[in-house]
Length: 141
Length: 128
Image 1: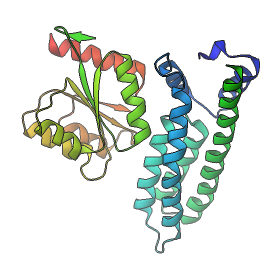
Image 2: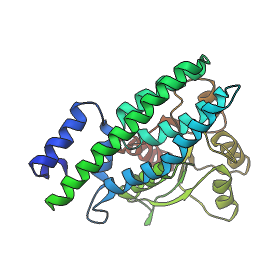
Image 3: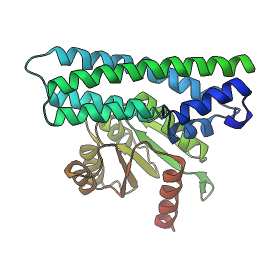
Image 4: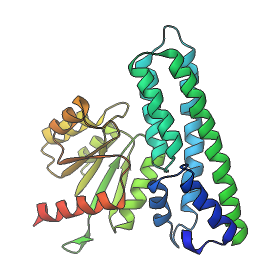
């Protein structure tokens, strides 16, 4: 279902997600790939992301508990998570990931810990918003 | 897009499942026949088993065998199809090493329709 064919509420929410910086152009790419053969492609990809990324988030959490801090490992896992999140257009999430990696580079564990809270927050926030959005789209069908 | 009657074939190599799904769908949308591999070793095994592809989309960082290593191995085997590197690391020594391994070009993730169009243009020139 193209963005401009959505009923009012879903359309409004979709526009808000873009305007408020939660999503970037990559989400448009996903929408373009949705067609009759794959009518729920965007939702499926987002679900896949949240399913797979839970493991990465958990790995970062566990690695942050290690002493001494393994910044290379932290950077590698975050790099993976960032790549995955950018493939669904998760703009705010991606920004926090970049910040985290910058702290890894200068080996600032406090910065990493603080930023990781932001990553988790944005991760959860986008999940909620997209779940609401897909619910609206489904109700309108 | 067809080449002499058959579809253009592509191999997507990435350890991230979400990226594999998105990239594969993108290439299928362009009319390509695609296969996927989870890492460089799986990609290499496909070639060893006799598969051929018109181009490979190769992620840089993967477990087991990464992009640069897989690219070097493929080139050493005489594989001369287009190998397109993708990375979110940006410009730097890692990207330079990846390109030196034998890539035809390297793009920043995530892959999108515009980049695929450019790759297919390059491929058309290469094949003509």
